[in-house]
Amino acid sequence: MESMALKIDRQVVAPWEVEPLETFKETWEHVLSCALVWSVRVGRRGFKDTKPLFKQGHVQVKRLEGESLTFEKVTEIVAGWLGARSQENKEDLVSAWARDPSTEGIVAAYRFGDAYVRSIHARPQTSFSFV
Image 1 (tube, rainbow, N blue to C red):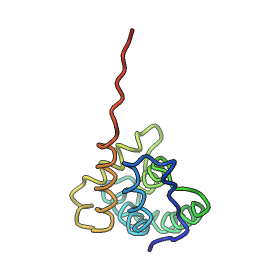
Image 2: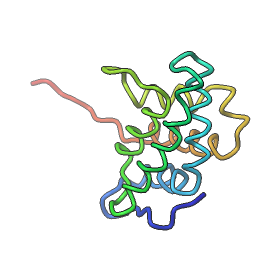
Image 3: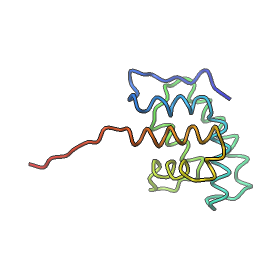
Image 4: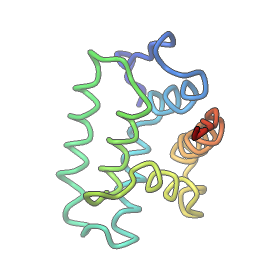
């Protein structure tokens, strides 16, 4: 279920982040469902905990309607749906879920996950030089 009110400010968002944000905008409800099921399957939460989180996910996305989507915000939200633990690297968690073979079978979630991982790999590498 696409939310037409979700916006992507292409002047603020890096070019390699546009595709996963557009895909999230189009498929967020499928991503939410798949993420919650995955979190139960891998033991991050019990099944009974998913119903309130499903409702909360809708509220989270509704709150975003006045803002511009960012890669960081989407990462934070999806990682929460996946059952991120404190101090856990949220990008790594979302990437692990995206690469999980069970996610691949769910078309909308896979589209988002694939775009997400490709975006991370497309980032320009920062080189550090120590003088």
